Amino acid sequence: MSKKIEHSNVGILLFLGPTQLFLCMVVAAALYPNYSIANNYISDLGMSGSSAAWLFNISITLFGASVMLGANYMRSKNKLFALLALLTGFGFIGVGIFSGDFAVTHLTLALIGFISGGIMMIAAYKLKLQWFGKISVLLGLFSLIATGLLLANLTLGLGVGGMERLAFYPILIWTACFGGILSIRKNIPNRF
Image (tube, rainbow, N blue to C red):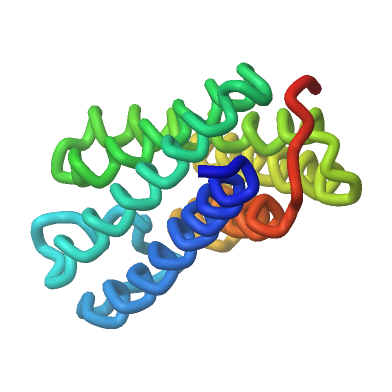
């Protein structure tokens, strides 16, 4: 397989992973009676009481797997970035396997995903992707600040669900955008 095709395939995978998760979250929330994006955690969609728990859990596991596969591809490009992507993917795979019914394990894995995801976006600055590097830093900082506020139970009137989304959505958006860029870019330099 040529490097261009491999590059493109990884990009497509990184675009599809978060896109399918976002769409599945919309469906799962619509099927969850009285679900509130302000008052319910995202992971409530995957708990045993949710009628679409299977959908959410499979979908977030696939998202994590797409990030881990992207990390595998990036390991020869930037080891720190690849490690952070690996941890991010691992965290979100774990969230899908250990639903919110396994509270401590689930929370630990979610924090691994959120924190490493935020740092991963900041580390992407070193990938020399012009304007996207600057956007990556902003999204990473935004996600980490929202994660900190959520942990401190400072939801700023958005509720726990709203603040959690401010921590998680930047990771989804960034991953989809990075995948899109990777799929059309000829190469990423081997040394950063």
